[in-house]
Length: 260
Image (cartoon, rainbow, N blue to C red):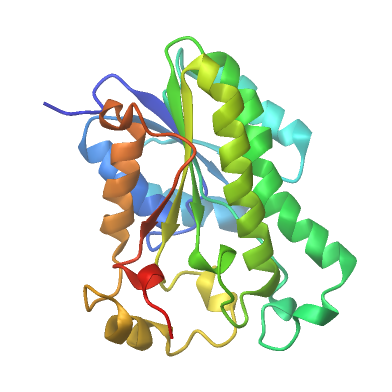
């Protein structure tokens, strides 16, 4: 039996078919979920996201623009969603941003105020903003909210810089949201995925050899694959994880266990 049959949700953050959000959507779709999507504003971004979504086998996707820095646009997305769907069982937050000029080794101390605040806003606050809008629909039957983090939120990864600070805020926000939304039967969890070469990770300086080093150090002696994260997200969005909330779950082939 498909564990997501009859469940509907929103995926925020598919950039292309190499992003974690794409693999999450793939796993959810394979198990019967109905999916809605957002894309970054602009025709180029829409084409790129649409191409990725159609590669999942969805020929006419529900796809709307979202500038997550705008409360008005977030409101618009949820208004349009409620006009098209009668339920929201899960929400996938897979968006982050930091100015790549400050994602280079040795530049953290010089991070400008605006670059710092912008990273926190897009990478962490947006989870709170989306959860606020999702709460009314999810509270009807319960639901699951998940977001994407990385080990640089806990330990220093040279070059990750302000994004590490933003991911730490994201993980902490996950716990506070879980505490407040639990009474509405809404679970909130984070997945700390291992290194995967994506548009976002390619902006971080010093990552060229990370895949090779990870495969050497990881207890499983390999790099994480997109499907590893996709299947963990499937579990978190399904009723199989009904007793799990406020957690950051590592899906990194065990890299987080290893010291120097």
